[in-house]
Amino acid sequence: MAELVQTLLTQRIQLMEESATIKMAQMARDLAAQGHDVIDLSLGEPDFDTPVHIKEAAKKALDDGFTKYTPVPGTVELRKAIQAKFKRDNNLDYEINQIVVSNGAKQSIANVCLSLLEKGDEALILAPYWVSYAEIVKLTEATPVYVYAGIEDDYKSSASQIEAAITERTKLIIFSSPCNPTGSVYTYEELESIAEMLVRHEQVTIVSDEIYEYINFSGKHASIGAFPQVKDRTVTVNGFSKGFAMTGWRLGYIGAPAWLASACNKMQGQITSGAAAFSQKAAAFALGSDMTPTWEMRDAFLRRRELVTGLMKKIPGMNVNHPQGAFYVFPDISAFFGKTDGKMVIRDADDFCEYLLHNAYVAAVSGAAFGADNCFRISYATSDEKLTEAIRRIGEALGKLK
View (cartoon, rainbow, N blue to C red):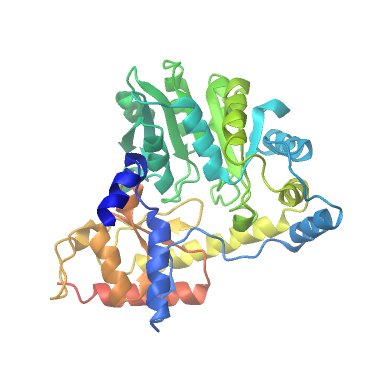
């Protein structure tokens, strides 16, 4: 039967990697089901509930009958709210027809890539990168090209590094700021330098993933699309999952050149159509309402960052930077490679995370999934108590390595 399945499935799906974050979360659940006290730091999901006023708006929308199909690119009400948000927060001017609402920012990115890329094209991915970028690019049959920056550069690629990787086949560049998995944030000056460089490469579309915009500890968020020299070539991706703790609501959106927004609308119309009506009603309300719960979440994540980085830096061999956003730390763990507890040799980041899962009962994600096989990712979107205990366990387990 296995051989038959191999012939039935396409090469496309057989070559696609499973999401490493989802895979590790499942492994953690399996161990927990066996009775082990597993602390799961693998998933990038706020541990806060959706703010009450947003949930109440959704309930009212249901009571008012917002249960029917919506326009493929989103309701006019929500797109107008996004338009106002872009202007207010990002100094971005988009017309309504330049905004497309999708079933999560992941679908937004897939729509863009499927509309722009095909076999023979190249897409530059600034690494470390979110796990799905590479697999989505591969799905289009284009070639992902990675531009890597290490911890010594705060995991941020320079304009000169990026330009060195551009060829006549480069169609797209994609990155996130604040970044998943590193928490790094590109400054206004760094983005300006990249924008100036990209003026020389008119064929390249910029995809800026800003889903963690509101979880920013460094001051005002900067959007590369706000620079006039590249505004007509930039796709700004955002959503409601992180800043509003609305992961299960599945709402993302883009602001894009009109021709590309139209293509994404066409693509989405044949795959999922529009997002849920009552979710969009609540999202429109969220964008124009009190942001206090969002800032309270941000402040809690900042406190946790200080807790986690402080504790991690006390572990000998752990090289930790100081992330300026999101809710992750991404330590360089290469100092542990080649070490053993007498049973298992730590050869790479995959081994490192497997060792922690089975010896510390802490679930984290190998940096290999993010294009950095000398690192691992911890999400601090959980309680102070769990974080303190998890890092104590990690330190104890690593202390057994020789």
